Length: 542
Image 1 (tube, rainbow, N blue to C red):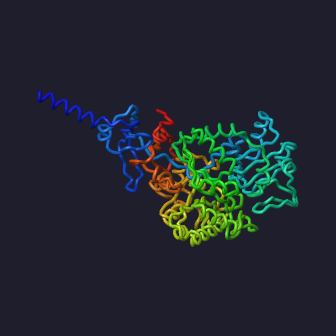
Image 2 (image 1 turned 90 degrees about the vertical axis):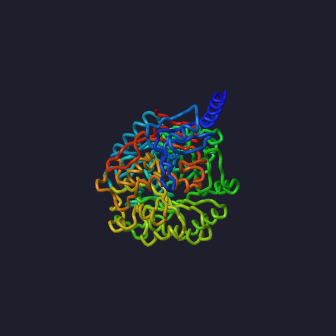
Image 3 (image 1 turned 30 degrees about the horizontal axis):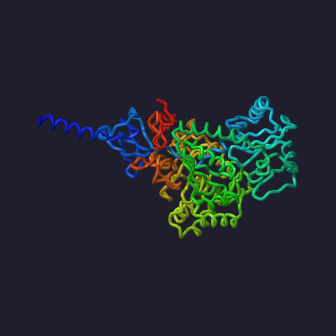
């Protein structure tokens, strides 16, 4: 009897030890915790959407039991990646119009438009994604061929960077743009006294605000398709870089319907309606949607000569680019954001725009220690201004694939001296700030996080160009890159207490990748094997 009682006691104790119920166990894994020590674990237990424990294989399997168990087959497990600068809404609209990305010539662009129109027979044709540098053209095109192909149907074609547009004569007439039309912060290109059809920066508003909008149902469907693709890439968080109120309302509807499976950190365009929303709602959170920041666009894009430069462009000494808002307008928005305790994330590409905004923030926010305001892009910075990132506490939020795309023409635009002293300087920015945040700016670039890794570490595109690496001294390490897509990106959206590392108490937002997460001189395609959001398996390729 004595031995029988002892056996029963041992069974009870063992049962208690192995009997802690959880929802999900991941084991036989290489779990990259992404904490300061860069710990690697073998297994984890998850319950109610949170990580219960991370540790050795035997410890987790002995301590917990679950109906769902994932044998990770020694694959790499990471916190779900952030894309810290993306445009879901822009990509959704692009999916519904003519996709002009990767066109190799003006004639191929015309061909895509003609095929699209043959199927859709639209009253107005809208497209986006052309890039004249892909056509081996350094100058922006004119609308001569577009007029010949579409003499009566209005056509609006936005350049890949979103800061230039090519429109035909029918569209100019439809909108009422003439050679005397002017707009602050924008350019309507005229050559030899005639409109070329090229509009820059705020001049695009003349067209964009008069284009037909897709239906709400079409946009929702496109957004959910994009969401599926992002999850398949291992991306669980997107910092949505600029929403107007009507777009915000659509995301709120999706959040209300619990249709968002990814986390969306929305930056609001500082319109009157959005400022009113911020005043009424403060730091807004609705399921997986959060709002506590404004997106300010200080200048244009480098590819269309809109980035605001201290010195003139090397290939066009007649221009220094465009400052889209006056310094006083920028200061007023910043003061409003400070009062509302909203973060500001400012698009600054040229060295003049970067200098201006950094100095304003350095003065305005010197009494706020943890503001986390960001500069988006920071593509060209005067070397003497790097110290402003440290003194102002501004976080650099950059897109490594911009460097490997722009390398085709960047030197032509700004010259060798500026290129080698302050351009696409991610290593320098990281050292100055102690932190850097990575995104892609999709749909300008592809959202593939492994293209980001390759560009950041190898300074090469997915075709492994250029062979020697573009400005290779500004490459960053693989560990820095992975932090920029996890922990530091979470810090950049005030979410580091919830996500960014795989530690006890954090949300179980996890990506298990099919191939080893590494970096080599040759691009290695990779994708998610399993993606988990709030402890739920959302994407599964097993």
